[in-house]
Length: 328
Ligand code: SF4
Image 1 (cartoon, rainbow, N blue to C red):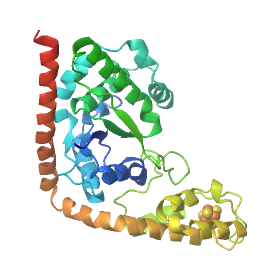
Image 2: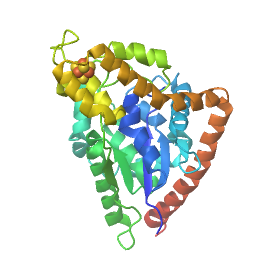
Image 3: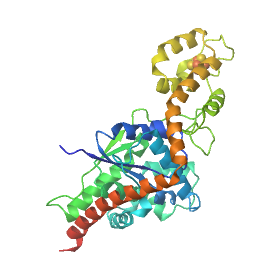
Image 4: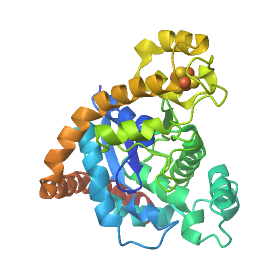
């Protein structure tokens, strides 16, 4: 039986942090044997919220180095830049005729962004970015899209567009499948201050942080505010460091929980235990990243190879679209 196809991507924001790893990348790596994967560097998507393109190329290379260093295999999982496959823009244009402005304005993720980023004059491209996402996914006939829960409304829009296209132009033999969202198990890892992990806030641990940097950062992580002295009893359920232990040090969870509650374990020791577990996970990633940092050309070649594979699939889909829509 042929493998189902996954399409997933990230905006090129430069070096990735642990939140990106836990929320997406780790999942991509785990799924790469079970599915046929395509991974997109969503460089056009960046323009929806930032017109400055100065750093896009460098940020792309930094991010792709993290993908590779963490274990994404470019042979199993071709990786490519959205901007290098012009069919994305073409399918986006066609799809933008199949959805109303009112439907896009109801998108809860957009409403949240407008509120959080204090956007007064929403640009047309930002309103329509779920349509570009639909083009990204359907161009490769992605059947599965790994997402966080906040992205599910976008998958719904993609499904609606696929349905509308099929009904309008290819009801005899549908071109597009309606993709399913696959929720990431450990969807969100908070930052060191307990808020959403984000480089703009400065509360991240990067995949490329050296061990002493990780340890330093962990020292400043928030814990249970009521545990002021080492022997005070703590509440792991309100402690960020405990959340990190759950993810990176699951085997020690029962003892940490007991010792925290009883006051036997102090926060400094607990944080150091956590730092050493995170460093164990990051060690091979750092090592592998070094080889790519010393050979940036190889990263560019991986992208060019991925783009060849992606372009061939995208061109095939567009030829089917043209046949159904425009060839009578
Ligand atoms: S001992 Fe560990 S789990 Fe308990 S409050 Fe301190 S850092 Fe958190």
